[in-house]
Image 1 (cartoon, rainbow, N blue to C red):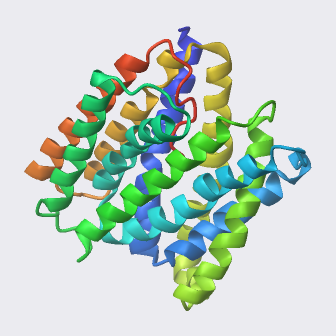
Image 2 (image 1 turned 45 degrees about the horizontal axis):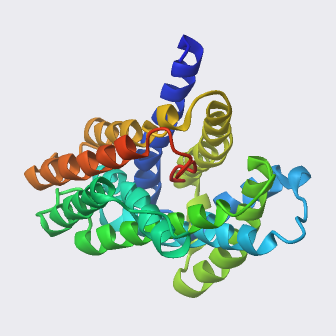
Length: 299
């Protein structure tokens, strides 16, 4: 890995990791309704990438399933979860996306699980259970355990999206992202109108500037810069070199939550986080050199 590639990888991890801080800030400090925020984000992404929109005959079933996983239900669970949990706990829990992907690939793609990958998946789930059952920090909402469960559902949604995308052939990342934005918009806007109210408070004078900053970070830096750079790295480097970026993203998310949002590092979060990340590292070790799970989690 060259210095340039390493620098790009660290930039991607930093943008993704700090996104948990930005999302938590938007939900709690700015007071943006979470599903409304997610709907606006994916709609803006779809508008920006509209020139890449193409109909792919024979593959749209998988594209739509990928959109439900990566552009709709993951955000429908992830953003409300951040109202209830902490950025640090969310950054760890979303790593369940990888063991969920492995389990789904065994069920639907008939891939072999193996002892070490099964052990890694088991450790990852155990670590998240430890976090969910532990005493939350003061920055968490009243439904901390429910927030962890929501974040686990977001990870499962992304795993479903990853399995669907693995069946797609010769479609560029930008073409996938624009469809993810369209599918997400058709799901998230109705959910926001049904489940939320007073969405326009995000544009109140005292909240407008902070809200627009968070939205710009999510759309421009996360969806365009970070994901575009990640796919650039995948084209230049072996998958097993790029894949561990998820671990660094989690570490940066935890550090950001602690230093920026002043979230307490509880014993259960540290213990659960170490167990979860060790399980993920074990999976990555067993996956080295394979073409599995090339799609990282989308935050």
